[in-house]
Image 1 (spheres, rainbow, N blue to C red):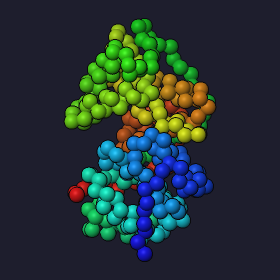
Image 2 (image 1 turned 90 degrees about the vertical axis):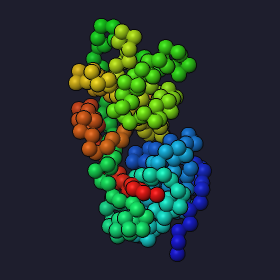
Image 3 (image 1 turned 60 degrees about the vertical axis):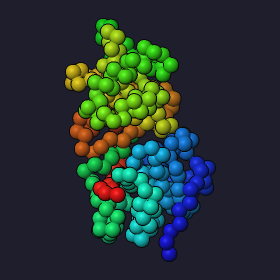
Image 4 (image 1 turned 120 degrees about the vertical axis):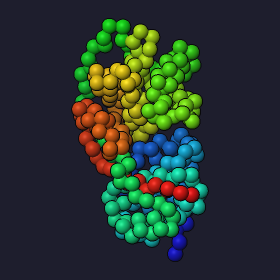
Length: 278
């Protein structure tokens, strides 16, 4: 029998599933999407939640552990996502579920043009310590919260990301990405009227608050600014009595080193199924 997936709202009963709630650190993005309206949400009303981005190619998939050996069910999920016609779809799913679907990988590669790209998987980190010691700012350095309605702040953000747009591959989506950062909770380390590093936080749940990114200008790296902004973000989150968490690509050695240095612990890893061709 083919699984039927219906479009749901963020108030669907499946979000009260005890197993789902226990996974909220892994799927913080699903929790935030329930109120941000940036994803369409689908479910079988039982043990599957699928988030498809209204813009972009990312798909977040949560499944109950009760179906991790049900290859036919995950095949139905992949077929559903294929039929949604999401360009260059990237499906992120739990590590412990994904490794039980070897049969799916074979079918997905042949029939659906999906391939497993474990080297692009995301690691999930959680910080469960106390507030951290913050070093003094250097001369002419200050940390400010970016105000999207402040013309000077808009210029700081625009100039910062223009310097990094080639590295980030933003050439065709620069304006959209800048607007995304202007509309998030963004803190900037400013020196001599120039942003040299920043940290963005958001996607709150009842327990967690995510560090969305930490970035440093290329010429200012290896000077401790990334660590400084990470510590600042952790303390901001701790002030709100939330637990800091984040995602990072498993192959990003510099980011992994930073999170380890700051005291984050890896909690899980998300596998990736990537659609190579439409």
